[in-house]
Image 1 (tube, rainbow, N blue to C red):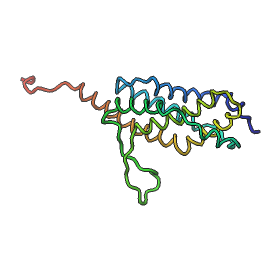
Image 2: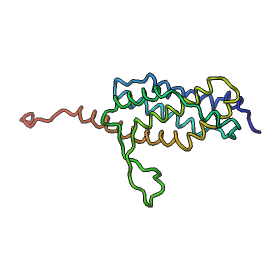
Image 3: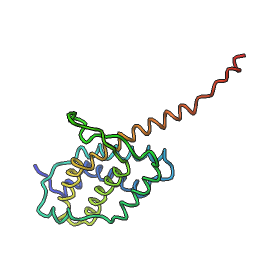
Image 4: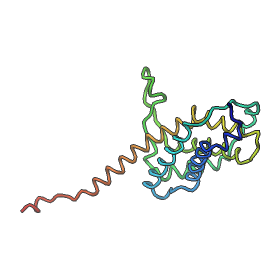
Length: 192
C-alpha cells in the first residue's frame, strides 16, 4: 500500500528525519563558531544523525510540479554566512584529500575536498526543502519528500560522508594532541 505524502510526512520515521534536518540547519545558523573543537565535534554529531536518518527515507514518485519547486532557491546571504563562519572557525583545517568515487579505482586521482563547500551545500539543500515544507502547501509535500531522498542520494549525502570522514581525522588530530599535551616532560635529573 502506497502512503500519501501527508501520511509520510506525519510518520514517526519522517518526523525523526525532519528533526535531524532542522538540527543541522540550526547548527549552521547558530553553531559554536567561536570554538574550533566544539564546532568540529558538534557538526560531526549533527551530520551523522542526519545521515543515519536519511538512509531510511521512503521512495516516492516525483510529481508534475517538480520543475516549479526545483527552481526555488534560498537567499545567497544565508549560504554566504555559513561559508564565512565555517571558513573562520576551521582556518587551515578546511581542506582534505578526496576522490570522486572511491570504488572506481581505475584512473582515479586524488582531488582536494573543502569542508566549507560541504557545509554550505548541505545547508543549502536542507534549508531549501525545509522552507518549501514550512510553506504548508500540500502541492509541495510530494516534491519535498522526493527531493530530500533524491538530493541525499546524488548530492547532499556525498557532501555529508566526505565531511564526516574529514571531521573524523580532525577529531583524531585533536585527541592525539590532547594526549601529547597531557604527557609530563621527563627530566633525567629526576632519576638522581
